Amino acid sequence: APAKPKGLTRIESGYWDSLVKTLMQRRTLHVGMAGILHVTCSYYNQFERCRAACKKSSVYKTRSREGAVVWKEKPEAALLSQATKGLTSCLQELGLTPASAARFHPLPAAPTKEERGLDSYFDDTPEPSA
Image (cartoon, rainbow, N blue to C red):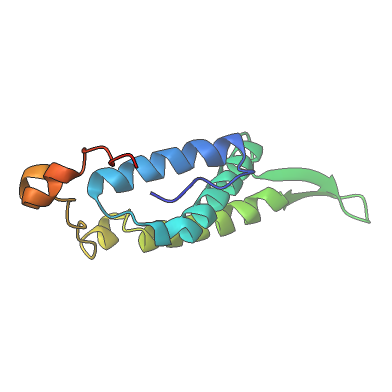
């Protein structure tokens, strides 16, 4: 598994752990996925923050120059839409959507000691001292 980047928020860190666990269980994770995992976690963080900001309502009331009451969309609502699209795209790249899952095949499992044969006998043998 790729190393978790430093500086992730609490939300990003928790999501990183969840993604890594899922991808490890599916045996579709490799070190080269660090970048897309990081971007996915960033989108997820933005998604959660914007969703919280829009929880009660995605619009707010203001007044026009003429004094009329006008309802406008919160900036967070537009950002939520962008984060949703970005997050969905990243999850597709990772094979974590129903449609994309079929394109991903598990990586081969590491051979066991028995499968490695005689060479595995020497794996646990201490090095001779000089």
